[in-house]
Structure formats: structure tokens, C-alpha cells
Length: 223
Image 1 (cartoon, rainbow, N blue to C red):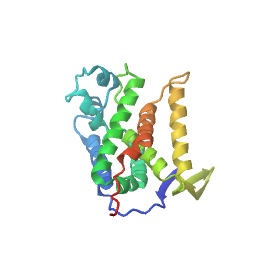
Image 2: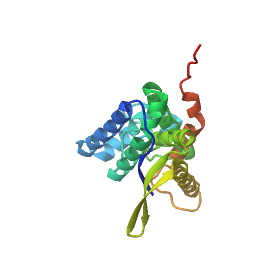
Image 3: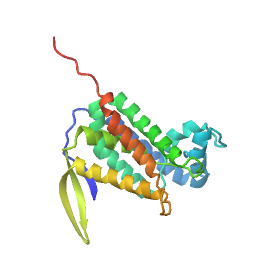
């Protein structure tokens, strides 16, 4: 199931959503061609759980700052393509609802919560975490609560056949969230861990879902 657009018009031009997508893409290509090599950049600016917990690091910047640098780094074309697709579909409506500044703070804070959710779930891990997934997960949680009935155009695969269907956001995002929870629980059980920071997704999603109402601008009444 791959969503590619929604039926949820906006009144503001989503320039911050576009800027965030542009920054992510630019930094992705910079890391690909950087002479230091991707592996060195990964361990220099990725968010390492053990460092975030102990605040001890040999990285060139303080460990808490790697939470922000890691948000704009991605491990491959499918990694960044998936994150930016979801940010484009759902981010513009959250930016429209919150306003530009609130949206930026909400996005970054979702990423912070996501990074520390992963760090707390694997406090001894020295494997760097990168990607905008946690921040985007916060956007998804917010969208689910604010626009559960909005129709999302989604590609459904039936073997070799592809069908485009209009599905409520509640189902599209709810299914995504269920997958994160299942994989997160299984990663802590008997199955071999993957390279996906499932608890970052879960933490960001729950943060967006539970706090988005607090971020909404107050409406001024008429006298």
C-alpha cells in the first residue's frame, strides 16, 4: 500500500514543507559525493543511542546536536524517497493548520522525541540512527487525529496488478502505525533486529498524535 496524494486542500503555500524536502534531498546527495565517505559522515553526525544517553561522544559535535543533523541524513534512495513522499502528502496540511513557525518547531521536536525514544529502547547501541522518519511520524500522528476521514489516493498491489483506491487517512496511517508497533515489539523479541529504528517511528507518532491539539493556534472570537 503506497499513498501518493490526498484530497485535503490547503490555504497556505507550504514553503517550509518544500524547504525541508529540499534540504533533505540536498544533504543526501552531499553525503553521497563527500570525499570523507558516507561511513565516516554516518558515525560523525548520526544519532548514536549510547552517546545520547551518556552524553559521551568522540563525534565532532555534542551528542544532543546529532539528533538534528541525523534528521537530514538518509541511507539510500528508497529511504529518502519514502520519507519525503509522506512528508509531501501529509506535511502541507499540518503546516497549513499550525502556521509556518509552529509547524517547523513541531516537526523538529517530533524528531527529537523520536530519537530519544529509540535511544531509550536501545541504550547500549553504538549504531548511528539517521533519517527523517521520526519527524515524519509525528506529522502522521497529527494528521491522523486532525483529518481521519480525508481521502488518500493509494496504490494497492495485487500480484502483478496495481489498483488506485481512495482510502480514509485513518486506514492508511493506522495501518502504517500498526506495522511500526508490530515490528518494534518483534525486534525486541525472538526475531533478529533489522536496521530500522522502529521505536523512533513509534515515539514520533505517539508524540504527534497526543500533542497536536496543544499546537493548534487559538481562534480569536468576534466581539
